[in-house]
Length: 444
Ligand SMILES: Cc1cc2nc3c(=O)[nH]c(=O)nc-3n(C[C@H](O)[C@H](O)[C@H](O)COP(=O)(O)OP(=O)(O)OC[C@H]3O[C@@H](n4cnc5c(N)ncnc54)[C@H](O)[C@@H]3O)c2cc1C
Image 1 (cartoon, rainbow, N blue to C red):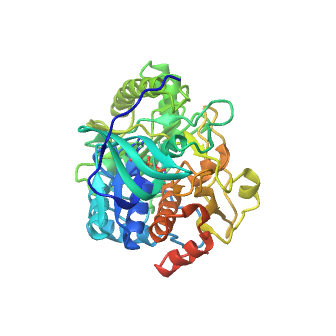
Image 2 (image 1 turned 30 degrees about the horizontal axis):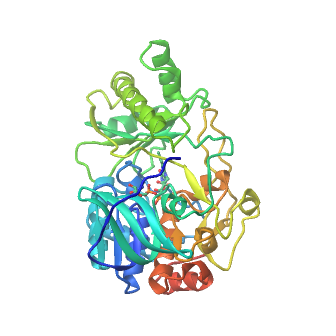
């Protein structure tokens, strides 16, 4: 690799905690550190908070599938109360991604978090295993922000890589999970779509939740899948367009908007290759237009639908993961492992999107596993934590812990730890779990 020197200026203010990445985990981390009284800068390369949950249009927030009613992160609970109170969301699950951006900014203000948008993380400055600055590219050139501790919430473990910590990528054969550029349609007659689903026997007439539609080729004899089959025969869709189809109604839009968790570009599997991600985005926009045409022509309720938006950010399910002080593996998942420093609990199934989509194996009643605090501690550095989908876990277990509720709990735990003491590498994770409970977080 070629090297070049980098000139940067110093950011005018120094911070106790610098959180890099203002997404699902990062926003929670910054608020949690602020709640501890630390001075916090939350740095994000885009111009909104929420990351995948806002900019990649990823709604709804999946339940953790636990039969126990727990909310590990009190800040997540507070966010949900705020969303519902403002009519920005409906319950624990359903929220409006655009309005979530506003709610997160409001909460950051409440917890005294300074925000810096439009700053793309470049590298770190370190001395004897301790990070002293994070360097960002901004419209004003490169700037270095001084901090006592740092949280990598980039999803891609970008800070951990720059700090020289060991990381892993994909499934061991260079394949990441498939990516999705989500899109949304407006002017959907959602009640007509619901009626079609009820008539087809796919939807329970008493189901009060927001509408979800799904189809996979393996759903043989499924009325929606039959429509996909017909559209492929008619040349309106390609076979790949039917590999994975999922759509959700979104609360708080008057005009009937549905967000689509597709098209899935299952043939492009390197989320860390910018050329591949570009190819995925271009492919996905073309496929989304095919799906728009299909919905108008074949699916009741969508006759007058219009393109509402493409996601501002590609949806990356998995890219790079740290190899930290604890590495979660399938035996942990199979044994439903619990830890004294378990800071997030979930029964979500291992959800690996694949061209040959597997059946999800659900845990039994009362079963769950835990994410230990140590899985957020990267090796070789004293004052860095990683939170969110890039924590230390195998490819398969990451497929079970990457949901938003878990990422948010990890973010809160990381923020509390960094806010209390910059020496996060030796943090007592069990004490952090207790602190989460003192704030009102609930654990089974
Ligand atoms: C298509 C798709 C569908 C999904 N569906 C669901 C679902 O229905 N329900 C559910 O609960 N979960 C779902 N998930 C999983 C979940 O949404 C994500 O795993 C989770 O939101 C990731 O959170 P994170 O904080 O790790 O990353 P993100 O939320 O992606 O946050 C990372 C942030 O870091 C920023 N960043 C990255 N690099 C830099 C840099 N160099 N400098 C500065 N900032 C940077 C990004 O812009 C982003 O804001 C889905 C994921 C995908 C991709």
